[in-house]
Amino acid sequence: MKYFAESELIINEDGSIFHLHLLPEQLAQKIILVGDPGRVSLVASHFDTIECDVQSREFHTMTGSYNGKRISVVSTGIGCDNIDIVLNELDALVNIDLKTRTEKEKFTSLTLVRIGTCGGLQENTPVGTYIASEKSIGFDGLLNFYNGRNEVCDLAFEQQFKEHMHWNSLLCAPYVIDADKETLERVAGKEMVRGVTIACGGFFGPQGRELRIPLADPKQNEKVESFEYNGHRITNFEMESSALAGLARLLGHKALTCCMVIANRRAKNVNASYKNSIDGLIQLVLDRI
Ligand code: R1P
Ligand code: URA
Image (tube, rainbow, N blue to C red):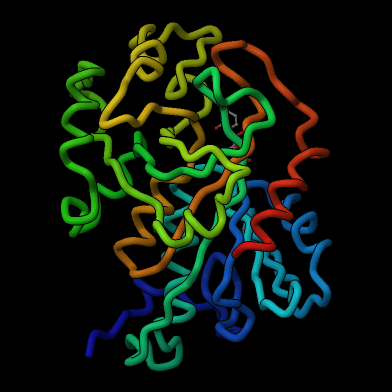
């Protein structure tokens, strides 16, 4: 049986997992992930009861019940590097016995739905649109560090995309990964556009935003917007969906990202007061998770 050494699986003195500071019994099997720690209490304001509220760094967790369902809401902060921490620690909480530091015999599958914000790239994704990421393209490189990456990714899509973009060899290889199909069908319904999301390792340069530093490829977003593969067009940019879908797949969990468009990069408009309007998306996910 595989033993996870103290340096590899770090556990706090109170028995909680290192970064999230959670004990196994504090986590539900249905989990909503949000980027902004402030969004956690907005989601939990819909709960009928709250059983725990734990804060550690950018990771804020509240577990409670909503219409008879036990749900945890966890903030990840910004970026795929945090998703690496959150997904590995959530999985450890349910699939590793933290006392014996060995894998449990019985596997527990988690359902993970991310509620985020994003930038829209097409005419059919104006500000206010809800987009469910049917596929994600990872510009972040995270999945390339894990064995099994080629077995779970859409290699033909990746090849076409790299050719279309004239992919710069200085960048890490993009990876293309699907959301869990059953979760997508159940949660997206008619209210969400099914899209292809690029998850970037940054908000500015990697998403083609140029402030004072010129971009390495000023034509990146034009090429992204015109790319088409088997009827799929790229709909939006955000920063976590590929790492979430990829790690969930490798670990055996079900994951989906749903985002509200707060900036349309084509029309060049924005809703900076989106915090007042993301509740509609939260409500849909709570009802369907
Ligand atoms: C950037 O502003 C952040 O917003 C988006 C991006 O993915 C990134 O995390 O999602 P959240 O609103 O969930 O943080
Ligand atoms: N989040 C992003 O990552 N990009 C945007 O344009 C808006 C929100």
